[in-house]
Every structure is written in structure tokens, then in C-alpha cells.
Length: 302
Image (cartoon, rainbow, N blue to C red; front, side, top):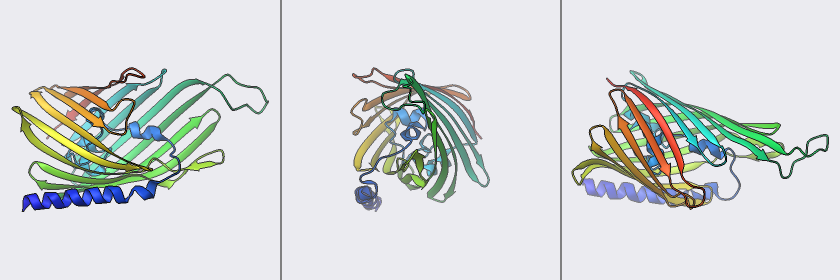
């Protein structure tokens, strides 16, 4: 009976993931930097945590926040190409009325060389700057084997003298099939208010994500293994991730995304201290070098 249920869930997930592709076909996306959000855990595991029952997966699926135990706050820094930086603060708290969480991310693209635009005086300015930021506020609730969650995202981006604002919504469900197996479905960045730069209007980078996560023992180590199918714009792709507790204080992670041709693989390590955790993830790339994320988390468990 359990095997039959799993087959049905997988079948529905695949069909749903493929069927929503026309929703996103064509067009362009605005403010793609918001997809850099989420935990280092998710980043190291290929962002395949749609069905993961823990706070680390809440950016892929708001319902995953039901896995938060008491309170968590974390800070993440990422250095990208040509002095581009991304900083992120995530907080979450478990209450008798549900779990509440937030993310604040800031992207600094640095100073860039102008190639097309002229200012109003007709003079060509050699350089310009660009930044982006977002605030996401969410909540999640558990009903027996089901978890449901939603988050509202407010985002703003500046490009030279111009700025744009947009508002989006994400929601998801998490289902506990059995003690160590979970299924998840999320619809992320539904555009409520479009971003407008000058006369161009665009939606946020909407995504539909479905996935399975399983906790098992591999070579004597407790592991989480997760997989997602993701539909975004006119693309459908897969993501895989694994996390192993190799020591009571050390977790190692790995991930893969089939759509990412620049840095498809990812790796990470988490050092677990008494109430703190120190994380690092890396995306090796032959073209741009490696991309790193560093973070620290404070957890207060019940």
C-alpha cells in the first residue's frame, strides 16, 4: 500500500511539473537575484529541498518551515563575479500559532561599465551601479501529516538612476508519506505587482517545484536524499541533493542541477556546535572559478 501511494505521488508530481510549463513559456523575468535566497544547506544540495522537512528548505517551499524547532537566525555572505556580493539574513520562530519566518537579502552588483545609455545632458557616463534587495515574510502550519506555508516577498532593484519594485507570493505543501519519506509541492514568486523599468514591465521568476525527500542510512551514515523537478519560464529541469551526518558535529553535502551549465555541481560542509552552526558551500566552475557562500546560524531548540 505504501509503495502504491509513493508511485501515485511521483506520477502526479511529474505530470504536474510538465503540465505547468506553458504557464511560463516565453517572456523575460525581472529581479532574478531573489532566486539566490535560501539557506546554505539548500545551496549546497542543489536547491533540491522542496520536500525537505526543515527550515533549510523554506525558501524552496514555505511549508518546510514546519520543521523549525523553537528559534533560528542566520547570516550568509556570498562573493560572486567581479566584486558582486550577496548578503542574507534569515530568521524563524516556532509558536503555538504556527511557524513565522523572514528573509532579507541584498545584492550589490558593484560598479559596471556603461555601454549603451547616455544621461540627460547627452554625455556618456563611463560607469554606473546596480543593487537589489528583497524582504520575504512567511508562515507555516502543520495539520497531522500535512504542512502548508506561504510567504510574501517585496523586492526592489536599482539600475543607475532607475528603480523598480515588485511584489510576489509563494506557497507550498509538504506531505509526510511515512516516517522517513516526504513529498513537497511549491509555487514560488507568483507576481502580484510587476517590476517596471522605464517602460518595460516584467514578472518575477516564477517557479513550480515538486520533490521527494528520504531519510535513510548509507554506508552507516544517516543521510537525507532529495530530488526535485522544477518548471520555470520555458524550462523544466531536475535537481538532486544529499546530506550525510559523518560525525555528530559534521554534515557534508552535495548537489546537482541539470540546468546550470556554468556550475552544475555544489558541495558543502556544516560544523555543528552547541547552539551555533557554521556553514560553507561551493560551486566549482571552469569558466568563472568557484563561487563560495559562508554563514553562521544560531539555533535555540526546545
